[in-house]
Image (cartoon, rainbow, N blue to C red; front, side, top):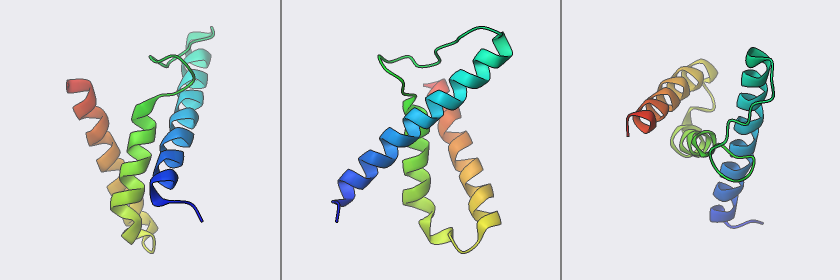
Length: 87
């Protein structure tokens, strides 16, 4: 059994990588050339990992209500992205 801190770190790392892949593919297709959307060394976008960890941590109690979970997580992650861009 893994330690809870290890699990949160894995969520962060996996979703940071998946977010980088998603955003790089989306921007590469739209721009018709290869685009690396990460700002760090390596294939990660930490905002996606942070958003995933926040959603899993804060909204796990809504697992029984998928529509409410989706809407709440959309608002939460949009707010996180906005605040990050503002800072």
